[in-house]
Each structure stands twice: as structure tokens, then as C-alpha cells.
Amino acid sequence: MNGVKISAVGHYAPAAILTNEDLEKTLDTSDEWITTRTGMKRRHIAAPDQATSDLCIAAARDALQNGKIATADIDCFIVATSTPDYPFPATACIVAAQLGATGKPAFDMEIACSGFIYGLTMASGLIRAGIYSRVMLIGAESLSKIVDRTDRSTAILFGDGAGAVVLEASAENSFLSSELGADGRRPEMLCLLGGGSRRPFTAESLAAGEQYLRMEGREIFKFAVTKMIESTGIALRNAGLQKSDVNWLIPHQANRRIIDAAAKYLDMPDDKVIVNIEEYGNTSAASIPIALSEALHAGRIKAGDIIVFVGFGGGLSWGAVTWRWA
Image (cartoon, rainbow, N blue to C red; front, side, top):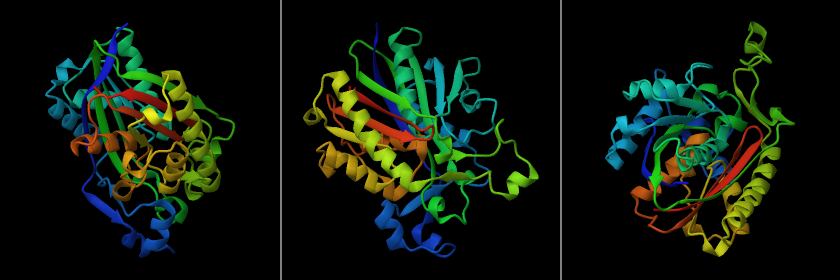
């Protein structure tokens, strides 16, 4: 079986910024209230004519340029997103075509904020099994398109962006372990009710706001902390590692208090936890690859470092991957 490594990373965030001060003008909230409870200060917001595929393409081109890789050398394209351009076709098909890779396999993964973790596991498996030599994995979201701007509980949280990685076959293996899980007994805890086969859009459903994201914040908070800790612990055990072996924790950027609680349990000091939530808010499947890209550009991650990627999201779903940087 082949090994696998990440050979290129890139990201993109839309130019428009939504600040806490902007939200103060339309919601019963304040910069202090939002910052204290979430750690967020700003969010990048896609333009009206920008779709998720546009964000993907910009991040993908950044990764290809950074890695000096030609699009023709990518064997497969995977997009992790909960905000595709259309219910179908897959956004990945559009991205591959726009990048000039018509004819290459391309598909989406819809597992919400856990998308990059699931995608990293799948892409690594495809390469280690010898099916493909290079896979591009993109986590991307246009969550501003499905947020009710009058709902304080969600309007303050979500932003838009994309992060891309290129994985390729390697003599040495960077993928050390993975732990994935899901519990779909209560999908309504974090969901988009309308538009699917269960509740197709109607005039009544639109009037009821079913086109907007809904979340039970307190329940999600408890779930998130528990699953981030549990999945990280299992992934470390599967890799034969201890908490003390970890150089970097790169968590899903959902809430600063969730990140801090998980890091405390894992005995990770603040300077070993990659956090950029102040700038981007919660970008769901895009949050981990954006954080990875920024950390690499800043020169923080070195060859041989042990990284834990960990996330949770709708499904409810969760997962962690341990990775040795090459």
C-alpha cells in the first residue's frame, strides 16, 4: 500500500467583511457579547454573484500555484460542502471543469462541518489503495446564503470561504489514523429543513423560513466538546500516540469556548492550537483547511510535526485525523 502526504495547500476568502459592529446595527447584540461567547470579530461574505464553486476554484488555484502542480496532474476532485451550487450536479464537477480537468472523476461530500475530516480520510484511502496518485480535496461554504440575518443565534456565527489541499502518493506515510462517527437520531439539532425530499420548498415553507439554517446551540455545544475530546483520544490511540506527542491541534472553528475546552482537556497550550475564528467565524467544512493554510504560510508547521485535525457538525457527525507533516 502506498503512503500519502499533503503536497500543496491554499485558501480563499471573499473580500466583503461582516463585522460585529455591522451586526450591532441590525440585531439585539454587541461586539462584546459576540466576542465573549464565540471569539468572533469578523466574517468574510460571498458576493451575491459568488457561488460555492467560485470559492473552490480560487482556493484550488492557490493550492496548485503554491505546490507548482498542474491541473492535469490531479486524478480526482472532492468538494466537502453543505452549500453546493445546486442540489445536483455535484459542485466538484463544476470546479473540475472550470479548472480545465473535464473528464476527471469529481464528487461532493455533504457531512457539514465534519466534511474536511471525512474527505481527508477518504482521499488518503483512495491514494493508499493505489486508485489515484493525486487527489484535490476542497472544503468550501457559502453559509451566508442560508443564514437568517434576523436570527441572532445563527447570524453572528457563520461566514464564507474555501480551503484546498492536494494529497499525493508518497514513499513515507503522513496519514497515521482516523476516527469518524455519526448519530442521525436528531437531525433537527443542526439542519436546513427545507428543500429536500422530506420537506420540498412550498410557499408555506418559505414563509416559515425553512430555507434557513437552524441550530440548537446549547445542545450542539455540549455535543461538540464531548465528541472533539473523544474522537481525538481514539485517533491518538489508533496511531499509537500520546497527547504529549501532538505538536499542533487544528480544530473546526465553530466557537472559541468549544476550542478552549477541548484544548484544555488535551493539555494543549494556546500556542499549539491553531485558531483563526476571530477573522472568519464558522466556515463549516472550510474552517480546518483555511486554518492549515494560514499556519503553513506563517511558517508555524514544520516537517515531522504531529497534527490532530478534529471537527464536528450536522449529522450529527464528528471525526479526527492524526497526521505527520511531510
